[in-house]
Length: 106
Image (tube, rainbow, N blue to C red; front, side):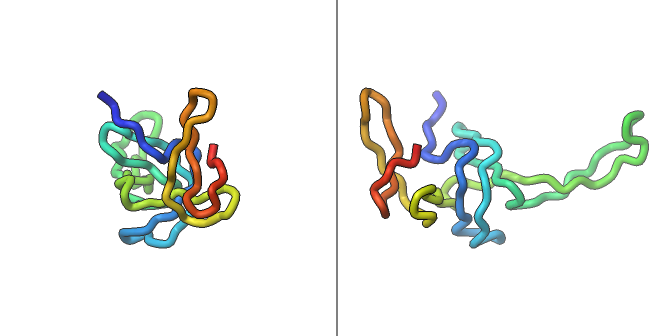
């Protein structure tokens, strides 16, 4: 069964731990079952690509690696601060709420 994460694809986050601490960027992909995220230009890794007919030279690519969800905090769109996230029900739907300013994130 897949877990539900507070952070979703497209959210802006701030890295709070690791080698890229302090960077603010956008979430590209979410892996809820592994509790990991791919964040734009964060945790860059080198991937060696084999030579093929399309790319006869091959080469070394730099791509984003995954980062654990506990190492990032969501940036509130209204107050632009890294914040913890609460939730409330509105009309049968769960809505994410900023703990610092109290406004809806969704």
